[in-house]
Image 1 (cartoon, rainbow, N blue to C red):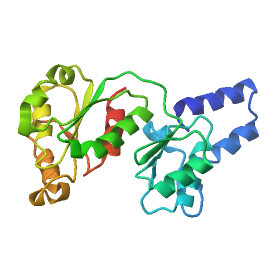
Image 2: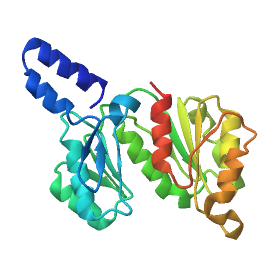
Image 3: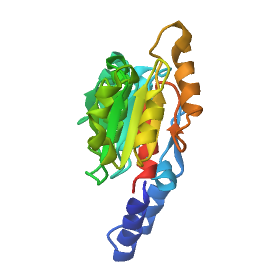
Image 4: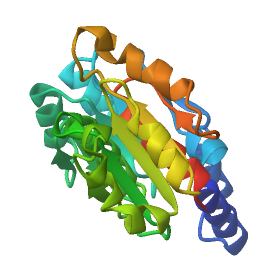
Amino acid sequence: MDEPALRQLLDDVRSGALSADGAVSRLQRLPFADLGFARVDHHRALRQGHPEAVYGPGKTPEQCAAIVAELLSEPGAGPVLLTRASPDQAEAALGANAEGRQTGHTVVWRPAAVRSGRVVVITAGTADLPVAEECIVTLTAQGFRPELVADCGVAGVHRLLATLDELRSADAIVVVAGMEGALASVVGGITAAPVVAVPTSTGYGAAFEGITALLAMLSSCASGLTVVGIDNGFGAACAIHRMLP
């Protein structure tokens, strides 16, 4: 339940469209519903502005389907996301909950209405695209219409400079990069827009499965970068959602 839904509930009680008992029944679901194996947080959208998502790894397909169903049971709640889903998890969740849409390893129900704000997602290499895709799907579910600019790593910096106008006109930028993670510093140095950096596990031995890129982004001389965890495209999208009205 988010703030508009809560206000609508109060208006319905005031107008007589909903009984006091009906309102109590709805509110009893806050702040969470206990499924035994999960306590589903219906209160998160009211606190944070966007609802709980379902992280697939470690859960059975049946558990994923049940948690998604519980989130969808709240009228008007959304968007509902199942992230990092295996084929079995996605199949179970989609089978039990109609009208979901799968893109890559993310399944979305009830995407938000289109909102303002121009977001550009830029990758250092083609190998970073799976992480960028998770970010793009999450941003789209939140109502944004992100633009993807792929394969602009600093090894061929002219490719990045060719997109300078696009970057400078963006309201926010997500930089997805592995190897040494230098792309985030370069982008952060040529635009005034908020930049969210996502280190990826792409790279050779000294990249240490994303640790090198993570430390480089955290140590960036382009001040003000927001850095999320390794391969966390979902978290980058949520950071953008918090930044842009």
